[in-house]
Amino acid sequence: MRQLLLLRHAKSSWDDPKLADHARPLNASGRAAAGMMRRAMRDLGLAPDIVLVSSARRTLQTLETLEPWDDTPLIEPMDALYLAAAPQLLQVLNSVAETARSVLLLAHNPGIHDLAMLLAGAHALAGTDPAIRRLAGGFPTAALAEFAVAGPWRTLTEGGGRLTRFLCPSDLPEPAAWSG
Image (cartoon, rainbow, N blue to C red; front, side, top):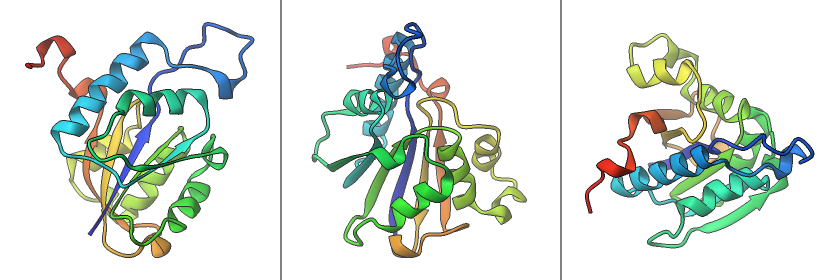
């Protein structure tokens, strides 16, 4: 079984209207949320072999907040992931090396949400799984969807993932509540 982690970048800043969208950085809230997600991922043992990340500043800064990893993954910044739609994101995943057991895809909405829904498949929406219902309601900034994928990456398609977890920063304790 393979693992696919879909992460939307953390909240970005709109403070400088002269900045191109691609160059927008994280804001303070986004940095805090990404830090909370880092802690949650570590606590859950979520450690990808490969990280595919949009080349946008906010996605790269989200990734920087997740580092360092216990075992450093192969990191591939990709222009093709910037504001990509679900079919383009799926195409990128279809090209992942078959030796990868866990992939983190860090990208943007609406593509990341649409991809998550596509992977869950139409049949999943008819079910009563609370994680699927939450996912259907939206994909907030710094949210993480974890999927189990049975087949090879090259054959991943609609309905090809089983949602095992959907985690939003609002689900996590504030840093002051963490021990250690």
